[in-house]
Image (cartoon, rainbow, N blue to C red; front, side, top):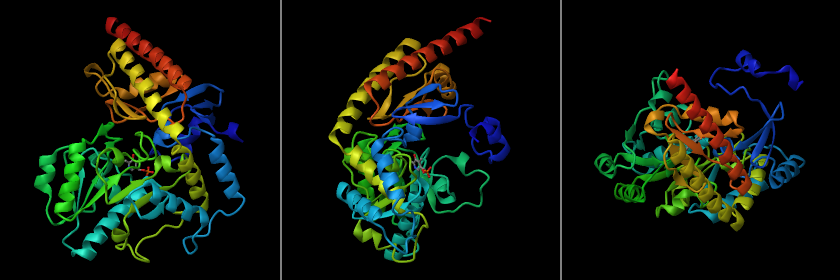
Length: 410
Ligand SMILES: *Cc1c(COP(=O)(O)O)cnc(C)c1O
């Protein structure tokens, strides 16, 4: 059956929202996966910060297959054990008292933004509805979440757009101070802007946002869809910023590859979404919650924290050395195993060429916008994975630079 489909089939039967590579991966193990020709790739992308335990992790397979034999779906008319256990665990591990489960990051954010609006409306009145967010932010692809996101290319052509949203420059305390007033119901930010280029919020900015939200009685919403679930070295990135949000969303790595998202908040704020005000058919389904529970057990082990620190150092050292040798990109930024390397002046707009060259050498690296290489590998990738991945990147850069010199000479 599988041999009857090819990359060409994609163009024939898929809505053209994506433009996938010619490679069709068929199986994975740890931080490696193989295509139809059995070519091996090292995975420095983690499926865009999703596969926190790599591919085919035994604890995830066990959780999924055990649950698959018990109960798949009931709807939210019934609760279920995996969802209750996961929510209990998440509230133990974070600031939050309450959890709402979704199927994706966008849906978790949709829930957070709807909560913020309804919280403002219920507690203060309809005037309290402004959402402040930041340029280059990414919060998902539903209409509300692209509007709160700060990348106009994702809203163009979809007008009319929901209103009441203001975008400010990121990490600009003065701009935020000037924009805050009592109509603001929420300030929404990523602790590290992921899609926007792996740009960390400064602790001073996050702390100022916290103080300004307190002063103007607004909710501080952290979108930890990408930064969460261990990537930055702590379970959630807010732990390192000296700031506790009122609402936090997560997804991506939460299910380690099984679709699930969550919005977390306090008991008091959760009162703004009483019975019947929001919902989801699949959110909190037993399969997703069973897998996420297993993922959470694994990624909170001390060995994983130690591995994140060691592999982060190894990867950063390697990237710094390659950056210096070839002059294609500069020193990496970010935290833990969510790193970005900004391209040098000569390579502005061409990050994608570098990632394509890496793929040819059997290494999958991401970009974040046109000017940043992005690394979001599994938290359990091995020293050998990093070393070999860096060797493949070395070969890719050597080829790229040699080709550039050849075409300049021609
Ligand atoms: C990926 C991402 C989202 C969207 O998540 P989906 O699961 O694709 O809907 C939202 N916010 C951030 C910060 C993300 O990185």
